[in-house]
Image (cartoon, rainbow over all chains, first blue to last red; front, side):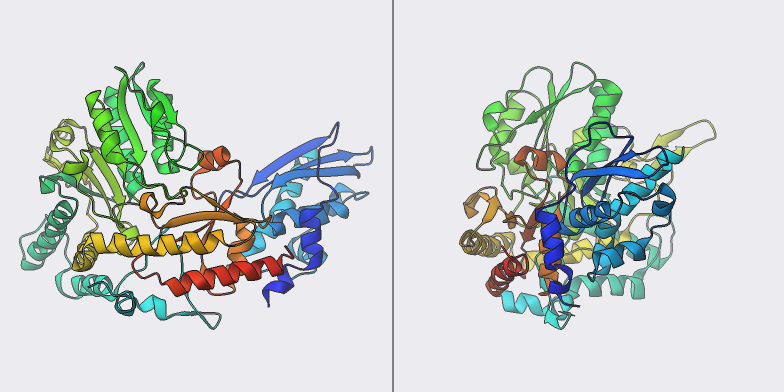
Amino acid sequence: MTIEMMYQEVILDHYRHPENFGKLENPDVVHKEANTLCGDAVEIQLKLNGQKKISDAKFTGSGCAISQSSTDILLNSIKGKHISEIENWDKNFVLKLLGIEISHMRLKCALLPLLVLKIAVSKIRN
Amino acid sequence: MFDVEKVREDFPILKRKIEGKPLIFLDSASTSQKPVQVINAIKEYYEMHNANPHRSLYKLCEEATELYEDARKKVAKFVNAKHPEEIIFVRNTNEAMNLIVNSFAMPKLHNPSEVVLSVMEHHANIVPWQYLRDKNGTKLNFLDINGDGTLNLGQLKTNHDTKIVSLAHVSNVLGTINPVKEISKIVHENNSLFVVDGAQSVPHMPIDVQELGCDFLAFSGHKMLAPINIGVLYGRKDLLEEMEPFMRGSDMIKEVTLEKATWNDIPWKFEAGTPNVEGAVGLSAAIDYLDGFGMDDVRKHEKEITAYALEKLSEIDRLKIYGPTDADIRGGVISFNLADIHSHDLATILDDFGIAIRSGHHCCQPLMKRLGIPAAARASFYIYTLKSEIDALVNALEKSKVVFKV
């Protein structure tokens, strides 16, 4: 793996120009997680319709290109999804979505938004 | 005569390759690499002298005890403590700070007592004091920094309630060398006590606790060529004698009955349980190694590298350096950010070049907030750092800009 394979145009683009950055007016659920080791933080806000499908999603946070772009890319594919679909998302799903190679040390960066989403969804369930 | 090329031959790890490239280790402020002399001393200890010190009457135990106590004497001499018993072996600087807070400050400092710290402190010199504040209502006052990353000493206005001033000698982010002698004078004129966090200074420059006039000094062995998990708390004898133990149990007692226990003399009063002989032996060998050059030469080499790195890094477009730009008042630590590249990404890209730097908040979240940044990259140097490694760093930073299309 070369370093350029990790920092592809798509990653840099989502890092510098995230489409889903910001806050929702009346979110149904908000959850934030920080990677205690490195300080990266991601907060995701979700809005649902009556059928427990995601109608809107936004995020705020600070951190590396991997964690921030991974969040933005994940939120791009979340709209219209039922929460049970999100419950089935796993590491491989995220990595496939990103379409880049990630070194072992940086996996936790890429998977930070998945962790936030999982907890947010469990909050909805409860 | 200090010869960096010869020094490097003593460090086996520096021959390692990372992804086929020579290792360029620029993270000595986190932990230093170890010379073969330290590694061999530990090996010899286990092959020849291993026993539980202070306990038994056979030969090995006598040797292990002697090695452990000789290490204490060596540390005392290294920082010019008046008495060897003023040296307490702990795990690291962080534990030393907890010892001071729990054993010295907790029983004495109540509301309206005040402790002065600064925004540039490592979490190890903040969080234990917050515990004191929460338990006792002790007030914490934080000195700010100036625009150039030096300490705002104008804010150091001690008063009757100021009992302790606890500051880093050298900042692990800004590299700032604080004028501890000057501060010590101000602190003592007010009859307050001065605690120095020497984690980033003791490994890198001559330290004389009597000349400096500090009441406590904490530092870690692993940042000065010794193994991980051996650290030192120096404390003035009269203060240590009046303090309660930190940990209780074996070895720190004189006599135990079912009803009560009486405490051992200092320093053992503060060293409960089987001590870290391996660590003390390693630290002793590390001090021998450093003394072979003399700490003046260690500082001289690092200052030269730091000045060179400051010059070369400041030539990089869109690179922002934090802290003083004058190597006279700066230790071998340079934190920076490059354009909009997050420090974790920078560290990952540099790793691809075999270059090890630290990224993130450096256990200084309040300082990061004060600087208005979420994180920073940090390169730090030691006796084995080469100018050519700084050139390699600069080259890799320029290439990082290409990767990130800056």
